[in-house]
Length: 395
Image (cartoon, rainbow, N blue to C red):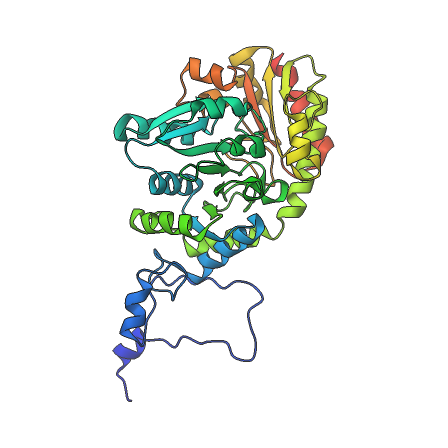
């Protein structure tokens, strides 16, 4: 067929590799896919694992990420989103309806706390907050309308470690109650919540999974295809789908996750031990320290007894000392994220948990002088020199 230049310009060839294969996942940036069969196209509108139709419904690069994280978590199916909050919202909105009851850990990421508060105020979803360390408290909170138990493997920012097997066991005899675990702080390298009875695992893939401060993304992994289907159908209409380029960046970063996590955990433990003896520090919270309330749980639950890559500590000088410290660091960066190769520091009460009242902060175990240190892969002596100098100014 002889075509005019205008038509040739609009239809460049799309090569399909033959005789070789790409060793890295290609970026399928195109948002729409063509079909030769009308029935196959019609079926693609309803299939989460069928032919690709439209990138909001499914994309090859995005699916590669979903399958990669699903394998790491040992799940049945996964879904990727534009952000960690996109994943959390998709799960909560896909599984809850007005009148349902949620049991949630008291110390949660501030964004999750805000979503649950909004669901309670606007949509009549009732929420009961529990400490997260007492199975009997979960059992006592159960109601006929309870539909969800929401936990964090390592809480943000207190680093409390939830005893997932014991807590989830309290709802195991209620098939109408699903357990959702935010595993962002632990990553699949330290903990796989599905193995402990969880139904859904969520991640801010922006953090440890991607690890390089260059991408925004979220992932949810499901223990059953049926629960995945419920959330997927809602998320397609919600539109918080992952971008192919972001998915590709996340896949690239994920390849070094084991190496980064090993170094970050080692650095975090070393810093926690030094912080614990510094006169400017009133208390240190790190699960790898024997004095942490959940140290025994961390040794049972987290791979190799590691404590994760985040340390939180309280400065003796309170809120003002916290402000001085976070502005005095030079190697560490004042930033709101974590899981990066670079060390990041922040003051939760005025940033990530700003949605909480003073009473709610106190109930969650977050002090006015609490500082969160998300530890990177730098040399430990360089890190400590920077932190020690900032501490001297915060005394």
